Length: 126
Image 1 (cartoon, rainbow, N blue to C red):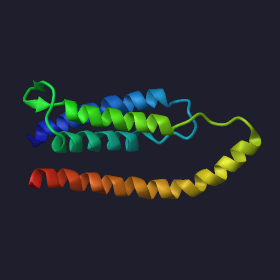
Image 2 (image 1 turned 180 degrees about the vertical axis):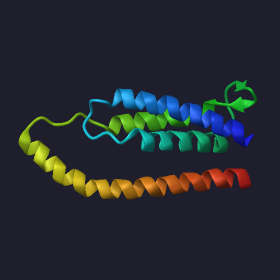
Image 3 (image 1 turned 90 degrees about the horizontal axis):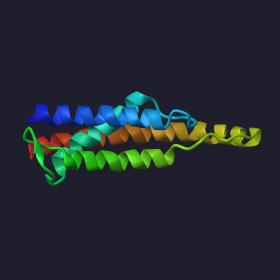
Image 4 (image 1 turned 30 degrees about the vertical axis):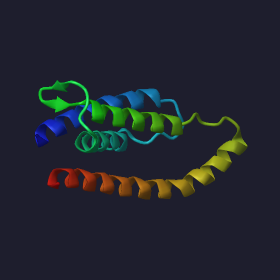
């Protein structure tokens, strides 16, 4: 059971990280592909554990809950990543804001990863 959950989450994570990388390639300061993969992987795994089983089972696995959650996270990240500005004053202002926001985003990322790992652990222990 655990192995099938991990394999399904890996497949969803790889597919959606590749799609996100292709989609956001020319868009400003895109996060690296590894953090995006980790987010998709952990959300797919936690979604498969905690959401109600739906859809037809494939090899005994219900894939729809994890897929739905990963699609929602993909759309959320796609909405956040935006095109870079073109004027010098806008770029200078954005650099100052992005440097301040980078620390907050990094801390939030690691807190989210920790909470997802706790949710996965609780899903197997309950």
